[in-house]
Length: 258
Image 1 (tube, rainbow, N blue to C red):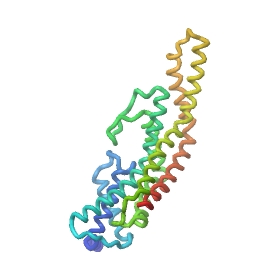
Image 2: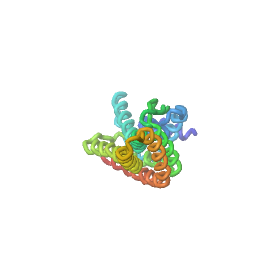
Image 3: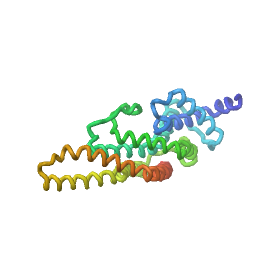
Image 4: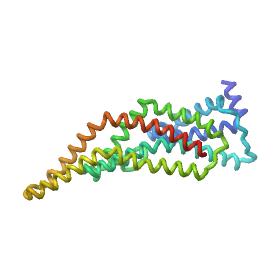
């Protein structure tokens, strides 16, 4: 214990930089950043990871001649941590987007639920897909992947060496664009089924004008949407696992541009 305390005191400035990056990741990541996780746990985990990394991270000279310069270096480390956490969170944002599309097509678009993490209204199906993906994320050790990315980030972007470049911004924007593509792909089976149902109901309304298509179509779309989701679940688990593997690659691509 005394050796650890002495090491922290000896490399205090480097410890502050490590703590800033770790804290930012645990604030922005979808697992550790949830509001229902106590702040004391996040602080303790950040301190614990910083002490561990202090023993393994290559020695980096901290060129801070004043408190203002040190604050700038800490802000850079916070930005690196936020980038890692936000890239991971993009996958979950894509699920909210897919759920919004599914809700709009099935008739759940007028009903939202409160997400305690973001304190905003989220679609029902989006919230279901988010919780399901969160479980898969933990099952396939996604939280360990995030911690591994944190450790490797110091090899790719050493402390005090972060620089925002045009290529890094372009890479991050490209990942943001993929959010919409992923959301459309996930919701595509349900959207296609509902579209075919709309076509069938349109034909019925022309051949049988006395039938109330609206009263028949609403519950039919809901049942069909739920049925398609049940069919999608096995394939959805595989798709999400692949997405998380690609998320790790995306994190490293962005870090390489910093």
